[in-house]
Image 1 (tube, rainbow, N blue to C red):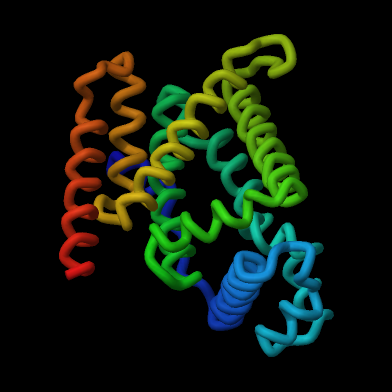
Image 2 (cartoon, rainbow, N blue to C red; image 1 turned 135 degrees about the horizontal axis):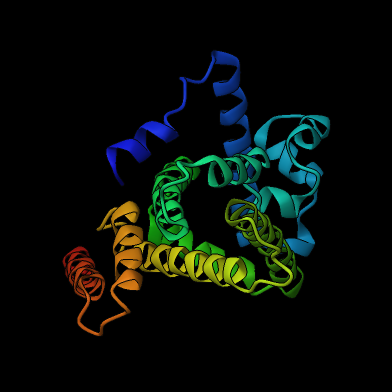
Length: 238
């Protein structure tokens, strides 16, 4: 990301009250993921989650409207913040570069969030695969992603001064960008976080800009990371 982009995304330090709220939100998400991965979604209630987190059900509902939202939904304000940043990012910067800059920053936030949820990225990926085997949760996650992608598409359309229902470009750009982020997440988690998620997202966007060459740096970096992760697993087994 450029220095200008970094400056545009700078955030003031969170207050003590906000840090406590963030800690509670992360705790509820971690407990929800652990319980559902262990028991299955049908066997976990909001009351179970609240009890395991040592809070009241009322406190749970202050943060999330449902267990599905706790499982998949980040802070709801992030979607609106992303929209505002897309719309108001420096007008001279092309839309694809705007998404690249913002999603690299978002990758750092996601990586920090998952670190707070506990366990290494590979363990998180295994638990999420177990959770998504549930048809109801898979549908809930798809709905949550559709809402986010619509928010991004509308923000891009506003930035470009176009109608997202008539002009396919904002939707295509959103689909490509979120797809790049999603596959970067999977590669990062599968390798145990060997390569920073921000770097993988950056390389994914560079590959897009270069026309997706088969010998792109992204593939080499991901392959090297997998080799290192496999070597570590073999060492741990002995």
